[in-house]
Image 1: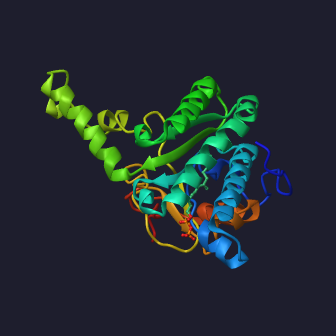
Image 2: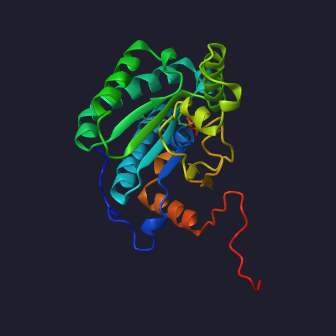
Length: 256
Ligand code: FPP
């Protein structure tokens, strides 16, 4: 990955290593608005968005965070102007071609999740190649949600499970959370601890609906292309202040 490695390569002293999230998920929002503010075409915002994502991936790796998942293209994004959709598909393919060698060298394991069969064939080929060539890597797990929708993912899992029940391979009362998760696109990847959304929008937008059940949510007004290490540092500081209770009560001392 050729993103610039600048300041903050070491874990900042005010962050506790043992309280870092194991998995960070990001909704990379605001590329278009960023471009508009600069007075440049929207597509340049997406290009800068890719640079920001590359730097975040490297930062997670530097700081010892084991998994990063990014929302690159939702099932709803097909409704954008055709030129923008075409640009994004071409951009994703180009990024994969340009970055694959370095991802292999840096021990990154890349995975794409979503309905990939609807993507252009050439992009599907780049995706398969990148997943195949990095599948043995044991460094950071980088998941890119492309033509992804959380509801569609849940329905997909339901269909597979229903077929297994129909074929007598599974009993209805055997369907529990573990069985269900095995059929999500993200099977084998731990749930995100921290979900970051840029550009101030306060929505999940159909992203990782099952997996974010207990994620801490951090929303920043910063537009995605400006989301740098320093911004990520702020997000992690906020995360480390949170008390994660998973629906239980906080620890209360007997005298309180
Ligand atoms: C949302 O901004 C951003 C996108 C639809 C594209 C996000 C894609 C990346 C960051 C790159 C993915 C990288 C790989 C490795 C394939 P927006 O256009 O909705 O911005 P706006 O809300 O300001 O219009």
